[in-house]
Every structure is written in C-alpha cells, then in structure tokens.
Length: 412
Image (cartoon, rainbow, N blue to C red; front, side, top):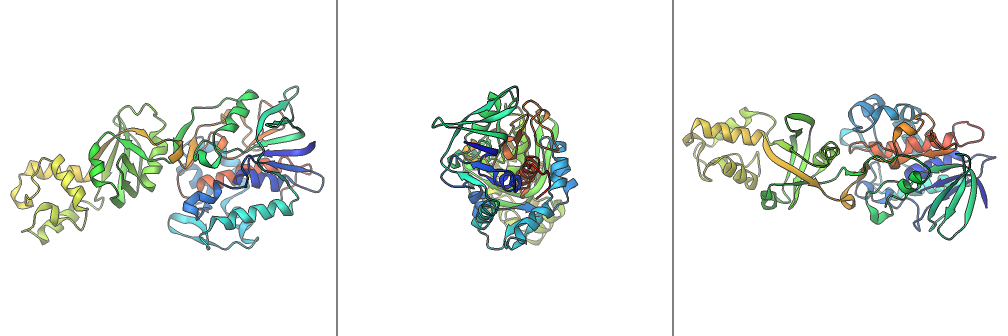
C-alpha cells in the first residue's frame, strides 16, 4: 500500500495537517489508533472546546507560551487565530468570544468542531484508517519511506507527519506513542512533565477548605526568593492542594522544577489592598474579625489565617495588638503554600516537554534529522497557558506541516 503523505494522529493538529496536505495530485492517509477521530478534542474545555483566543500573536508568543515560544513565531503568524476563526465560520460554525478573549462555538459543543474537521477531511478526500496503531517508522538513508502497523502491514509514503499528541489524558489514547516513534529515528525527547495540572501542597489544612474557590486573587510562584510567575484569576482548594484556572497556569511554571525544592505559592486573598479590609472592620466594630470580613473572604479561610496568625477566633480587630494586626494582614496578602508536587498526566490538560525544537525547522515543521518527516501539535516541546492557546498551536503547527507536504506547495 502507498500514500503520498501519511499523518499519524487524529487530533486537531493531525486533522488540520491531513486536510491541508491533500490536493489534486497528493494522496493523503490519516491513521488513528482510536476508533474515532478527535477523542481528546471532544472533552476540551469541559466539552465546550475553547478553540483559540483573540489575543494578538505577539502577545500570545511573549506572554502565554512558557516553553520555546520563539519557535512558534513563523507558524502562528502564518496561520493565525484570525485564520482559524475564518476556517470554522466559513464552514458554518458560529463562534463567540468570552472573558479574556477565549473563543468557543456558540453551541458550547465540541462536537461541532470535531464534525467540521471530519467533514473537511471528507471533502479533501483524505483516507482515514481508524483502530490502527503505528509501531515503527521506516526510513532509508535518513529519509522517510513508510510505516509499519501493529498488524504487520507496511504502508509506504513519501512524507510523514507525526501528530500523536502528548501524554495528558491517557484515557483518550494519549500515552506517548509519538515520543517513542520520534526517538526510534534519532530525535531527542526533552523531559516530559504534566502541565496545566493541579498542584499538591505540603499543608494539610487545604482539606479543611476543599471545594472553596476564590476569584480574582493574585497568586505568585516563587523558587526560593525568585518570583517565577504571577497572575490574577480563580483558584479552588482541594483535599490534596490547589486547582482552578490560575493554579493550572501557575503549574506550567512550577513544574519546570520537578524536584519541587523550595517552590512556594503566595496568594493575595484581597489584592484591592488594606483599605478594603479596614473599611470592613470600621463598618462593623462590634463583630469578630472572622465575621467582619466574611463578605471579602470565606469564613473557613479566615479561620485558617487567624490560626496561622496566632489570633483567637473571636478576637475583635480593635482589641488585638499592632504586631498581630500586621501578621494577619501579611497572611491575608501572602497566604503561603509549599508546592511539593503535581497530580499525574491523567489530570493534566497538556504535556510539557517533547520533541526537541532544535531538531525541527520552525517554518516547515520538518525534521532536521530525517528528510520528509514533520511534526505537529503537543508532541513538540512547546506548551501554553489556558485560554485556547494550546489548540491554536496544534492547528497552526498542523497547518504548517500540511502545507509543506503538498506537492503544489500552495496554501489551502
């Protein structure tokens, strides 16, 4: 069997690459080991599919991609977030913008995105092979010649795109197969870590406030005395530590120090400042501290902060010493948690690490080691924060790889 171009992986990057690679004189085969395409894509954004973001490309690169951001400059500018929105809207998918520039289908249904991509493949006459696992990449003289499947079949090709995804959500089939295949042909795989993942803390009192969420709080991640990340957003306390959008973003920086040695999170529970706190106390002078600021911070959290500050639960603000007041305010603005680990890949939205970008042409996504081998999506050692950026990267890298696998080299 022969196909001009083979794509391994039926996720967003693979489907985009396959449809774009197809043209009148270029046969394309998309191989997916699952029984359906887009299995992981269907669950993104809790099934709503945060497709991309309206942030300008320079801001995406500079502020929302923690790992190897400059590598993405060419592909993100070649197939932009505007281009991606046009891709779907001209195929009948209505899109909407939510807070922080996040783009979703109006239907809030990821199936609309998956079905549109599937129709795109059908229209492009891409051959789809489901329930098929690739076990080996075939090369000759450092050039792609084909692949070997798990049932012993060889499929020969001229060009091959690896778009197998990472290791996050392994229940969807993302178990790291692509890393093994890339390593087979000599590529370097950087350290693989779960990213956009809940954090585990040393302090056990998070159990006492599990389920409690704080919105619009300022969080900082420190490595020793160095501030490595800060953001404002929502966090959720859990029985093991902390989760929520802001904490997930923080994890993409914290996990770069996998030994978790001296990694701390500081939470400013009332970033509007002391004046807000003083107003609450002055308006209710007869009430205890914990009840006076119950409208600002949940009582369960105030109780913990009082305990850390060595202040009795029923103390009134007017009755405590200056030193106690300062301790309390400091703990309000710098509620400290020691980060000792993360949850596993099963709980991670994406994978940090992957095929070393030094071995990939950033314009074409072609391997610098093996001729006519290309990469797309999460398999590459790039990762971004929440907000639709990771899907944009998958589509943009898939587009770049697909274009350069076309015989006519015209952009589709």
